[in-house]
Length: 114
Length: 113
Image (cartoon, rainbow over all chains, first blue to last red; front, side, top):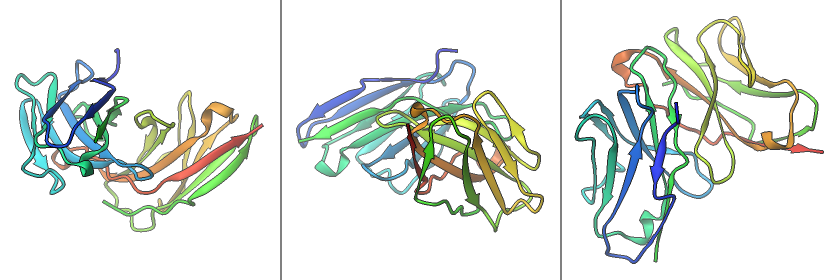
């Protein structure tokens, strides 16, 4: 168990550019979650997958955001036409689908939009 | 999911037990209590969770009152590395509920030498 891995750890981009983040969950976990965290706030739920199916999306996930998990393993989160308000820490977590199973988080990707 | 109330901050002495309270007076019978902590610039770290019974692991102990309306996370011997924001989260734990967590403001714990 190597934990949840996220890449890159930091990303600086100019407003209007597209960015993509990757998350590799714990291998036996079939659920994968994306969260966003801004400075001084707790993490906010964005979306989650059960295997390759995206089962829930928060209203925070605007049309410029898209997440995929094509083979039910790793996931990508893409932000198109980035805005300064997108600057945040993007966290990925995974869990099994057993009742009560806790989420295990990665260390996030910190995005700065200039 | 039930709402939780935690003190915004607390100080603890290094080497002493740290007792972190959480109120969840509207908790329902199928909701678990989870504790996470977040050290600066890292992702939230799972600590412990429980439904009705007290739980203990290598990191902490979780004490849930008999009426389940409040709980206490106990760090038995606080170290400087335990300085973090601690989140108490109550969540419906059914397969259909999706396991997602809703974070509140947490308690900012400062362990002092």
